[in-house]
Length: 364
Image (cartoon, rainbow, N blue to C red; front, top):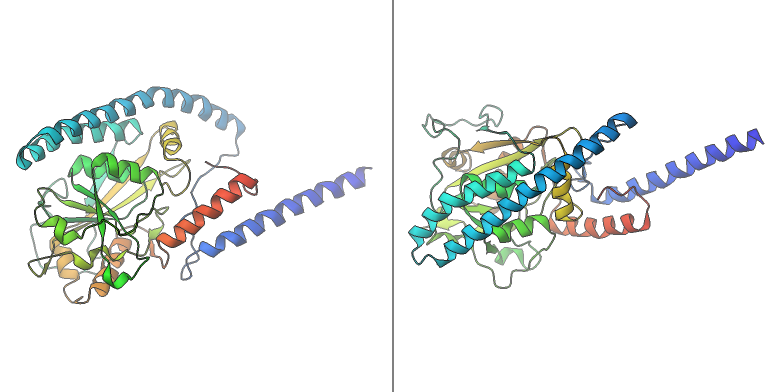
């Protein structure tokens, strides 16, 4: 009987290992061909110490109860500020009001999510292998003060936290990039979003079509604020930069490229990554509140240096690729991925099926 018990135990373990291997093998369909990295699988570290997990459960529950009201207050603040802004008849007054009120709500929201300290710095030109002429664009502190109205802020996209940070620092015009699903050579379309609309997009997984969109050049011709662009069109787990949608194809003003500042985001975590690639957006926020704290690092590459680094990229595809190379280089151990929006959409479909069928442990 004891022998059969051992055999049964071993059989169950082998069967479990077989199932896990099958699941991971299926996930490899969405691994980047060049690096073998899956940019969509959520990252999480589970402690094997039962006592520590129990303490985290108690402390995390208290943190959620304390922080959710802070997030709710910030949300209401932004709603009221946005409503008042719509009532103002003059664009200059709207911009003044937005810069006066929106950063307060955005920073309070980040504080409620556990982002107490945000470290912002300039990119290391030597690591990026850039030979940049001397310039005073790095003397401004905090970084990004030279970004002007109509300029582009191009960022990697992993979480709603990036939207809130950009609202806090720049209160820009937010856009949602349209994937290159139909005739990519003729596209370059974005949708303009309010801050609340950008937050909603960052918490969901809706991939828009090009119908009814606009180009960045049209958007920037009369802009009174910088323009935020997430050219990947979807969120990754922060291990690299996805393919760009062709939204920067029309990023010109007076036959010149619009000044573009690159902003790279990354996170340090001990339990759950703040990046959001699967699952419900509200539940993801609760999990951020559950953690003791969250750490965000922001790296800037000023527009002057971006222009110098991409000066020889005459074709817009080469320009796109160079921007991706720079953005990936600003994130430690990050890569350029050959995957994009369509791959993420397929991965989401499969992820939902595996969660429902119980083949993998639910982490949502």
